[in-house]
Length: 249
Ligand SMILES: [Zn+2]
Image (cartoon, rainbow, N blue to C red):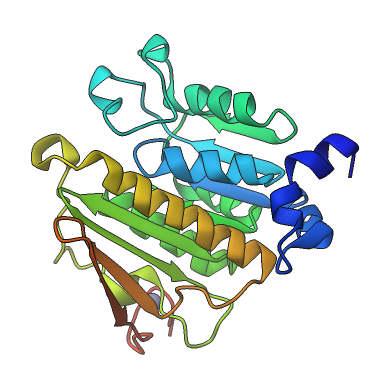
């Protein structure tokens, strides 16, 4: 590590759980962030600031005025630019010592599989069930841990789905792909700005812990946040023995 890096990451290096070895591990790690919106903004910025060395940010949308109330990675001057590019600019402004790849696309099929396989951890910061299920399937197939977050109105949720662990459920164990759950979009329902910040920052925290092997992840637990009363609820979630996604055959 260079002198600059020792200074930049000094508050991580001071932590017994991280140290120089852990920081080097982060610098050598790859994270895939799917979605550069409300959740992806804090998640990607914290990963960048923390020195995750290789970050891929995927989003097919452009920065819009209505995004800026909560998507803090973007800027008024970048309205109209691709979100992936705008996010890359913000991340490199914060930390030019990392590599950021901006993908202006909605990852699907073989492209999604390829990107998930190349990552040590995946953060699902998308806003719809179709993407969440596709990302979950790719993570199960590749054996890559998935940090999943969602937020709408004043309600947030976060969990980790870790296919490396035999008793960890996958996203589809919890939310079956049978269409029972319907998308509720921020555009019609609204969302409290700091809520996506709280959930997105927690996604970054869980991703960093997974990369570092620190503590216990949220695998097997779903955290629900009621932002009106600022109350967290933790629910134990088990693997579904009949889940067609993670229990083939
Ligand atoms: Zn499953």
